[in-house]
Length: 106
Length: 128
Image (cartoon, rainbow over all chains, first blue to last red; front, side):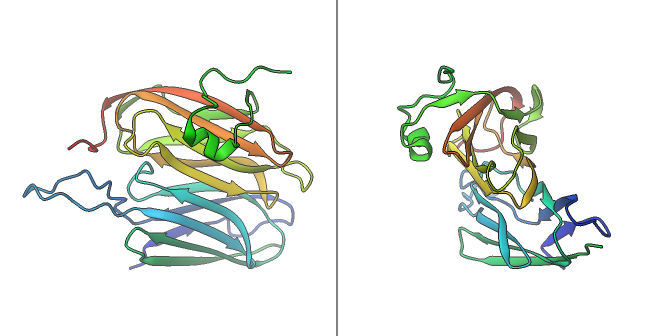
């Protein structure tokens, strides 16, 4: 099962503002929570997320457990040409994730 | 010349880490949070900056600072003229009622901010 879902419009016109929505499955563990057995859960949150469009970085977030579990992000990309929108992220455990979607520009 | 914002301390080391001591002015930035949240686990947040987002005039970064979270440096967002609008939405985890500040840095090097006060009825589980 994918760890992330990227939502884009089916197609966009060149120059149009495209709403990009990404949702990543991640606990964003704060490091303060205890489980039912009273064991403190080690902090593990996504600390950086980068979005590239046709290979160029367009958005970067440096994050903390102040971002809710299963983080979501919406922003408005300027459509240029058809190409991949690639998200990459890394958490406190140095586990990386990626997700890619194609933006069709007509 | 506008006066620096009262809700931003220019001697706060966290603020200085972003601004290097420059004034943070009121205006241009809008931080949208609900006035009240039943709990702090997942609070919708939108930041908008008044910017044409052109190569010559755009937003470079937005920093979010919490008053009450164990980690005050909640998040920083970096973007530029590849975005059509200086606007983004996410969800925050908030450890109780507090003020949240958004500081935006524009491409001319200026800093602008907004503050939102939110009442959180049940804090996110960040306590011991």
